[in-house]
Length: 49
Image (tube, rainbow, N blue to C red; front, side):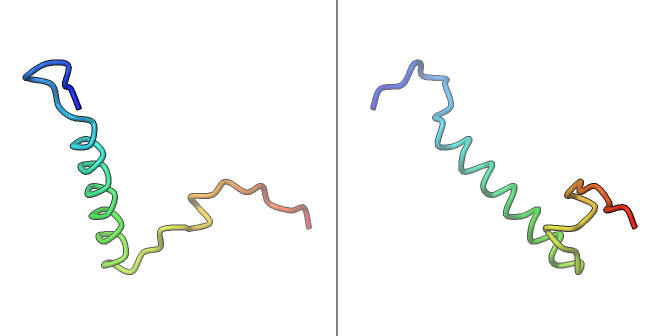
């Protein structure tokens, strides 16, 4: 696999960083008793009563 330059960052390093950041964020949310999927995060229109 050829690289564009000697100072370029491989794309898999960026992907690994993103996955680790998302994983740590999920662990932080779950460790304080939060939920990764909450009604506030999903904009669902309220049904008229």
